Length: 134
Image (cartoon, rainbow, N blue to C red; front, side, top):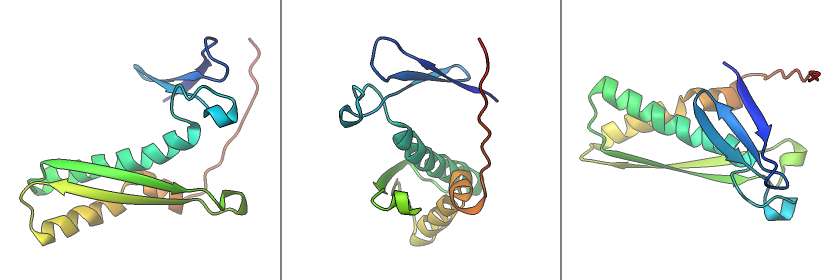
């Protein structure tokens, strides 16, 4: 799969992220020189964790027949030590529906196993950047 990011010349920093048939705006904050016309790359990174946890919980609940009706995931970022190599994300999950304590615990355990969390915490990511001539 290929993701393409193209500049939106209507804004100082805004870009459009193309993922399959989806378009996602990305921009810097006003403090960074952008217009806040979309989430920042850090926001998208953090959002990937929240979305993965939510989707993992839905998948697990369906597979196990757990009647979860609603799922809300809130992600909080502490980037105060990012330059020192520590980037902290905190995920808070809320489940709706008639669930037992055991079912809630099972859903929380499933959320801890989401693939994005595994990528963020358990693998080495190698990135190659090249320049392509137009």
